[in-house]
Image 1: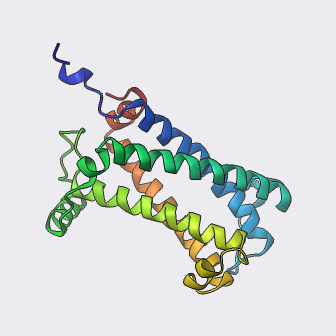
Image 2 (image 1 turned 45 degrees about the vertical axis):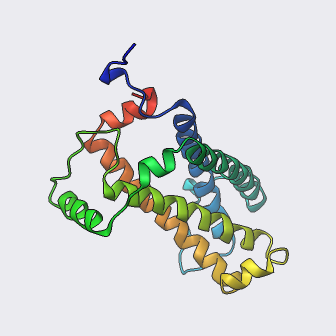
Length: 200
């Protein structure tokens, strides 16, 4: 029996679960991370206490570590299932510079088509690959900040403990930038939100 086009599953259940778990983990990690940052600021500003999580440094660390493990195992599941199902190669490649530039400038002009939601355009491919790499960088830099002595090679690759904190901070900023653009795009193409809820 042929599945009707509007009933075709675009996002399998495991992908949708991973997406929403990531959202929960992101909110917890960012808000608790801001509280941890406030205990020893890198730059000449602090985040308002009202938008942080944990109440105090110890509480924020507990929230942060809980969300860290959630992110870690959810990310492993996401990558593993993407690779074994062939979805990773099918959705994100090929990615050509020419296509990326064309789609980027089309997006700036408001002419980027979203007719086939089952396929990613070049900008989407790049954005998702970027955020995967960024989350990996967040995890690695976070390990250095958490267990600097136990990960000496990682610490040196990051340029030392203090530098790892800066890397971690700007990787967080990059992730929030991705989320902001992601939310704007969902607002512009709301059926993508329905697709992430229903899968079709």
